[in-house]
Length: 182
Length: 316
Image 1: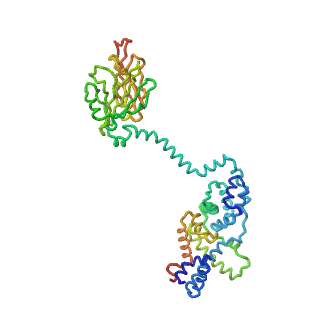
Image 2: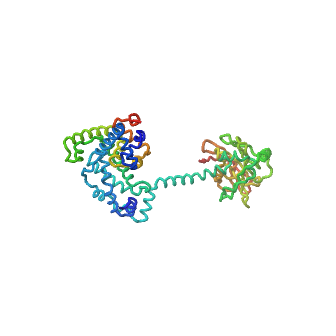
Image 3: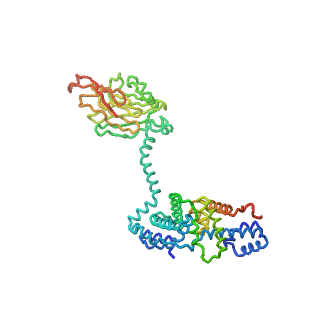
């Protein structure tokens, strides 16, 4: 598979098809990330599109010492934050929209449990600050390492870890220091 | 394995990052410790819940590829060297701007630094680090040569003893003129009121606060000209107006008016008389930019009869 840096070089040499490969490779990841930030499918598609246009326009600014996808995540994150600010869109989950996600084969009991869990998480996610929400999304939705998250969020790895564990403690109500047995 | 070790390894255990033996040890510990087992289950549930919540794998969405490819400027990048240079500059814009700013700063600083380092009145550091004695006899190179008149400038420090020797020749030195800020005084050595013999003169300049002395010579010693300073007045704290005229001969008493800048050493003509029979004999400061010139105009080439009058000029 073409490495990202090679593809970037090819685009900068004028080979537009290589950018097509880049989009193909990362479109789903970026959509997933943006969607989880705003929970609006159409807007997420628009923002994904805008993200890749910006990636293309600013490609000459990309520094190869960083991971390419982290740079794309950064652009997507900034676009999404701008979108939320611009339209004052409060992060609210659209239940009907979310229903599409689960399998239609799920049993009524499981669906009830699913809805309960989902409601609990939604409530919790809505209460989080932007930065904390982004960390949780990058960790659970994208499965990124703390180091990658720290690069995208422009903060130290230890800060990301600390914030991540704090968020989980707040969610579960378990204080790992106090309640774990020693 | 005890609970403490188990807790420390829990994250890695859940993520499947532990080596096999450690993983087995964790599993065995959970069989013995119900609290750790409960914690493990709770965290597993939490991870599963979040992962499920953020899972969008089954969500259908439109590909944005066609829209993006349709909207981008396909000719934006290319092998053209001009484009490569353009984007290379744009990519390092900050670095280039910083370098340009530093370069500009250096370029604009050079004249200032030069004046601070080399001019006697430009630099406290120079004055402090070099005593008047050290500076004495270090004749500075002629900085400015008036092309029209051939007047050469010499501006150098002299020792206090040397300066006082000149100043104490009362008959040979003019009355001192003090700068507006009272920090400097200047007099002409060689043009005292009782001087009988004419010749080239020198301006003796004293930095009153630092008690340092300097000499400024403004002479044109070329054959046929023989010009020297015949009168001075302060224009401001950094500029002296000097009347420069014939060094020899008792008949003429004045000349043209020049401005000498103590910092830049520039000598520039500010007033030229209408002909050789006319000369400025004295200059007096009026208000801010106005000066009153005493002019002596001879009737003919014999330089016997003359009339005197005043003329007002503006120097900005």
